[in-house]
Length: 94
Image (cartoon, rainbow, N blue to C red):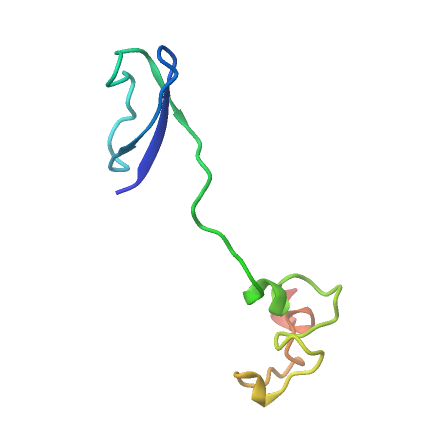
């Protein structure tokens, strides 16, 4: 179940509630009975490190290919791409 964050306008308390997506949002603070509003929280999903973004999906400015080297090679862990290995040169990317 998703966790939603709320802030009370009365006591200024910020709290989290586990609710189903189909459940109605809370409107009353469980502590003081004041009106609450749902907050937009930062996602826990983050892309870090080299990964897919640095390996060819960040655009064509660097001139690198999917293998990260400038030319596709069979020893990069995957099959060689007929377009040269980078998404910049791929006909399907246009």
